[in-house]
Every structure is written in structure tokens, then in C-alpha cells.
Image 1 (cartoon, rainbow, N blue to C red):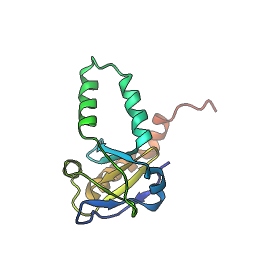
Image 2: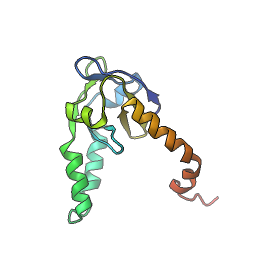
Image 3: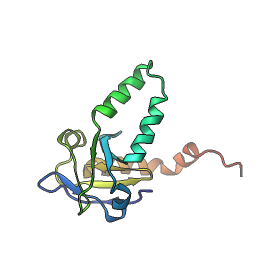
Length: 144
């Protein structure tokens, strides 16, 4: 499980140092791609494989499904962190997310998101206002 918010920087080779607590889960490889809301999403390799399997079960006759999978897979890159826990974010993903130097790395349970700091601040500012209300909408009824 990926948790927390971290603020690393891209180095001169467009690498970002992943938080130490994430490195073991990603040591065998990862996949990164365009994410929702203009961020970069990072999955473990097995996590991405499972997600791809679930998508393969969808109806590819539906235009939105084709559109989504085309963007996702066309923007996907695999990588393996180096010994210092660094990954290189490819130029198309940096441009998509507006990443230049500072980054915000956010744990999202089964995946990680990498955001441009101002975009993250704006997003979280809006999302936190709705957080309490959303709990009852996104959690299934427990019956208690």
C-alpha cells in the first residue's frame, strides 16, 4: 500500500527519487502513464498487469473504452528504479503533467501519483472541501 505525500525534485537527468518507503514494492519494476487530472501514475508491474487484465475484459466496441485504453497504453512506460531509488520520467509524461523541477509524490493505495506542486495544491484544496461529504458516496453501506 502506498501512503503519504512527499516533495522530491527532478534532477538534471529528469529523474525523481522515490520515497524510501515505496522502493521495495517497486524494486522489480514499475509502469508509469498519464493519469487523471494531469498527473503521472506509477503502478507496480504486477499492479499494472492486473489493471490491464481488468481493462481487457471491457467492451472494446464502446468508443470511450477504446479512447481510454489507447491513451493509457500509448503513454505507458516501464522502468526499474536504480540503486538510489530514482526513476526517469519520460518527456511526454513530464509535459503532460507540467513537471519541471519540484514534484509532489502522492501515495494512492495501489499506485502512486506524481503532480506538479501548484496543480496538486489546487486539486487538494478543492477535494478537501468535499471530503466529508464524499465518504458517504464512495463507501458501500456497511449495514450497521
